[in-house]
Length: 105
Image (cartoon, rainbow, N blue to C red):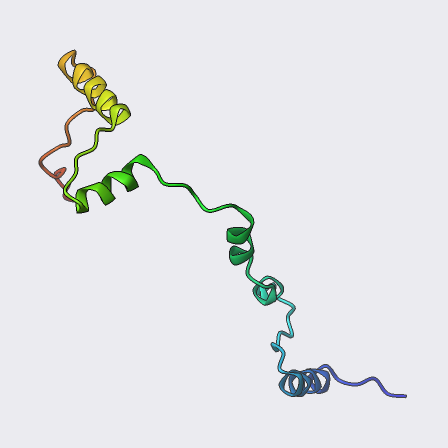
């Protein structure tokens, strides 16, 4: 029996891919189709973990809608600490106001 030519096998493979709705990839390049066919993991992960409880900031936003005031002691302590560092000269450096000059070639 005579061997079948490569061109003929490639034509057969192309028709086979059209019939079975698969991707024609004669070189066998990795295309990620296996990963893309898998079901998404996001929705099941969201269902697995319990919903997050309310935070101080979310409660404060709700209170602002009702025109009530709240105090976040942790945030105030943080801002006070940052202000103290700035006064001692240990704060974040200021951003440059001018763009760096371009060097001509």
